[in-house]
Amino acid sequence: MNQPPPTITRLLPWTTPEGKTCILVSDGGPQGGFSFLADRFEAVQLEMALGLIEHAADLLADSEATDKELRFLCCQLRATLVDVHRVAVSRGERLAGDNETVGE
Image (cartoon, rainbow, N blue to C red; front, side):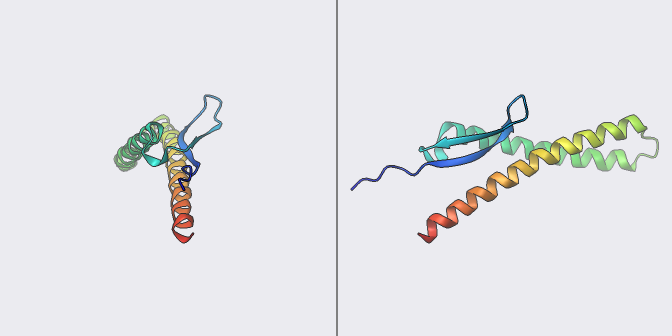
């Protein structure tokens, strides 16, 4: 008997304009269009985080960095940490889901 594909939920790496969580509910599996878009979006977020880490190292090493520059850096680091945390949670949930499927 053919069983319908399992319903998959995925935390997306972006939020609504109001800051609410976005979740993809799909029966298309991880190869669906939105999953591909989310994967690419996550990759960009992680690349940007790496660039910001490098910029932070440079700015923190600059003894003439202004309070305004350091405050802006802190705001950007916070936003990046939120993004990276969301990516980590999403990937962790998907790994846990894979482990549950393997164990069945």
